[in-house]
Length: 388
Image (cartoon, rainbow, N blue to C red; front, top):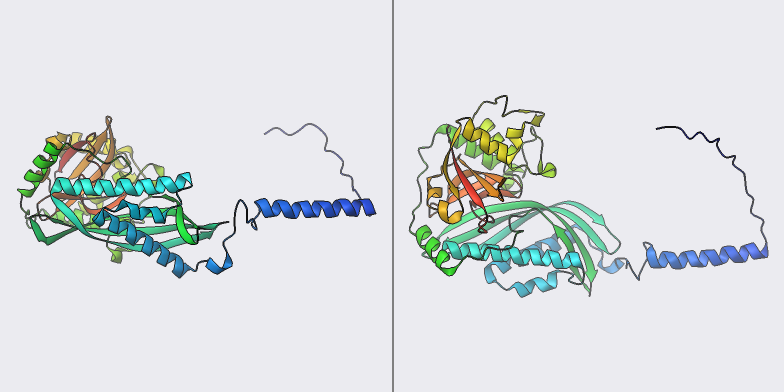
């Protein structure tokens, strides 16, 4: 940067002459300053009302608010009563309305998926871990982990309970309004952000009939490398993993969630650390991952063209449903939209009807049905066999 060629200005010292006129001006400015501070400062009770001291929350009270709020949201998936959401959000703000609308889409996604399976959800249970609390002018800004277990049964087998876990970090603002605490903003990575699918009744009936005709699958004779790959995937499923893991990723690897997504980095780890696939010049990690290590499309292409994987089937849900039962733990699925691979998940098991379950990062998934959140009619699924 070039220096300013102009000579510096000389500083002069100004003295305040105390007169009756100056004292009057100073007093007037002081009164005006207090008024402006009352309108716009931390003490504002007009534009930015301060939290009344009588209702300020302790950390335990904030945790209780989150638990009660999320428990109610979870119940909506079972009851279908979306009206219960109205009391949870500040719907006079744009972000509050958006947060509510997201929960509506989420409930609709889950309900549509269960109908397609011939199943129903019977319970949701969420673990909450508060990470940060920041007081604001009219409430609190929160960061917390929420890890939810979803339990479901097939309608023709109500005694066999299946489950999966979804987890994510949430950023939420809450404010005190109309003598209660409400959500004014919330953001978190979630597989239900897109509009829910609207399959035709004939499609739903066809899929439901086929899914319910299937039986549980036996994975007791898997290649030991596949077993080890699944164990690694379960251990490092992050916010969706079992609580005893600490909900942590493997600290030996960079977290790419803030750089576009960590799903492919996680899948590469599963194959290398768990499945013992050696690194190559194209597929490598040294402080940073190579393109084939961290990019979903490049990873899919590398696995196919290197001979480490082969294509089982590709197409929209209706075309690959039958083939999905050929997937084995340790295989993977690539999810393509508008010609671009957007996501990678690792197969980790199957439910009581043999329906394939997967793990992935962002949003973190643990033993989740492979199409959940993606079966919108526009996704092309690539089912890839991995050669261990």
